Structure formats: structure tokens, C-alpha cells
Length: 304
Image (cartoon, rainbow, N blue to C red):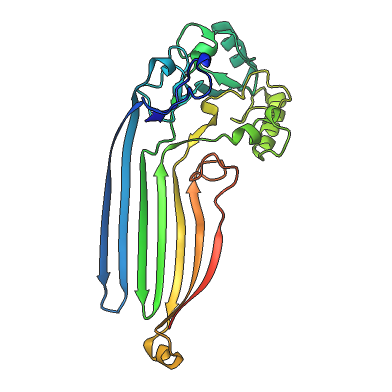
């Protein structure tokens, strides 16, 4: 991989240079299978399925960036991890009762954050009895475990229909939760999940139990919940009807009267629907604040 490594300032301008100094290993497979047939009633159809799987990992880095490249930190190099891996804190939901908070404080010396009811519970990854920056670890990546596509097509007496589905199995880092689910981190619009958090706090005041996994509303980020953690990682699997096209081609006896070689009218929809548990804008376009737009197209193809 090409990289522009840092250099000593005494070299002055021109010290930068792109170098092929990072090694990455890629392994995987791709497959494609198709079927086409014509039925006795005149309907012709086709089914085409493709899929791919691949895995990668960084295998070597220059010494100068061994612990800093790719989100690494001292003692935690990205070597051996997939490219684009996330560094952060493991979590165990939120605190639901005051007893959970008290037991947590008795068990761990909390050096970062302020545990409380409705606050995110961070895990002591290195088992040293402390909750601090040393508990950061690799949390995975959004590299698809498997991606696939399915084309379905059918035609009958001039009518044609085609459907294209695609999907992935992967984890997803939902950065929008910083804005939608953490009231203390953003003063703009938020998710309706904060209404659930508000009702959960009312329930806590009445019963002593906070019955939500969304952090409680607060104006101060005393628990440092803006930090990267498993709180932002979600199931990013999805199935999407990416494109649907329906058309009609005029028969030859009409074309000859119109002095055309071909004529077809069609209607097309893109990003028709998505099935997913991902709570961000769109699991296909991670990192974007808005979903892929749904578009409608009417068209006419004429040949002379």
C-alpha cells in the first residue's frame, strides 16, 4: 500500500514522498450463477445470483508508524487487524439501577467517566481493576463478511420486468448516534429514541429501574460518552431492492406504421426499499447523514 510517511522538519519542503511501505494480505472468493429459460406460455425469465467474500489484514508497517497508523495506539498496532478497523472501548449496555452503579464503583477504580443510572457501562478489558484509556481495544471493522446481488427478469408479449436486489452481512459504525442519541453532545435535532429515554427516566423515578438501552438525557457529558465505543456499532446487515424497471415494447406491426425500428416505454424506481436493523440513515452508505434517495424515472426509447 502507498503511504506518505512523516519526515523530519529539518528537511524542509519537499521531504514528503509516497512510498510503497505497507503490506496487506487479501483473501477471498467470488461466485456467479445464472439461469435462463422460456416457459410454454411464452414467458421468458432469468435469474442471476452473485456473491463475494474476502478478508484482509495489515501484515507489516514501517517502524515510524507502527503504533499510530490506522487508529492504533501504544501497545495496540493495527498489524494483524483488517484495514479500517475501529479502536475503542467495549461496553456492557447501560446502568439500569443505582445498585449496579454502586457495585461497579466498588469493583473498579474509574479513572475516566462518571458512572450513573442511564449512563453507558464500559468494560475493564485488560482486567486490571481500572477503567481508563488502557481498556481501549480493536472492535472490528465494517468489512463485509459477505456481499451479494440478485437479478430477476421476466418478459411476456412485449412487457418486461427486472428487479435487482443487493445486500451485505457486516457490522456498521453508526456515527449519527453521536447526534441522534446523545443529548449532551449535540444541540440540534435528535432521534425519537430520546423520548424513550425520557420515559425510562420517569419509570426509574417511580420504580428504581431504568428500562431503556438509550443513554439517559443529560446536558453534560460527564461519562465521556462521545468517545469511540461499541455503543456506536450496530448490526449493518441489509437487503435492498436497488432497482425495479417495468417496460413495454411496441409490437412490430405498430412500429412499421409509425416508421420506427423500435419503441419502448418504461418506468424505473431506484432504492425502492431496504430491510435492516441498522438505525442510521442507510446501511449501504455508511458515514453519510442522509439515505440514498429514492428516484422515479419515466422514459421512452425510440429507434428510427
